[in-house]
Length: 195
Image (cartoon, rainbow, N blue to C red):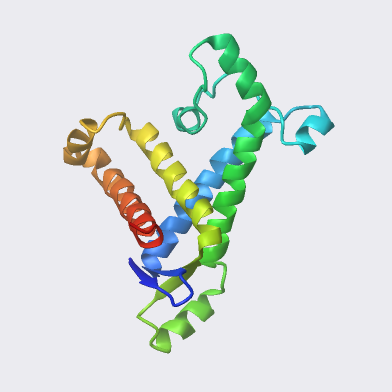
């Protein structure tokens, strides 16, 4: 993974093809997760649905979704009311952001196009994604959502959990992916945020 600053102030995120495929696969899984929740959270009222208003009153049972859509208030009634009004809009924005990231990765090219570009010597199988100041927010939100979902799935609830999960053979690979996503996120923010 490399970030290359461009003259217009945007960045080119250069990923090895395997890194790009991994990011695309993870983002696709996030999209599937969000779409599965969207089907259960849609408001039957077409007006509310068109306004992106609505959602369930109950927090999701899935730990990853619960981390992505936490209660906004401590009391159950306030949290349920807020969730019922805002959840669908938040879900739609997360979906839109994730779709923008997969679109920018553009891995939908036929395999022959990847092989041809590799043969042309463009870096041995790399994928470049352009990240402008306008597209930065969807990238940041999607990378953050991926990290939150991964953390919820493996029980990474506090910083003190990290060393234990990293030492465990079953979760080590997932923790490394979590850290890799964090490195991309950190690099993006450092490059595009003036000090």
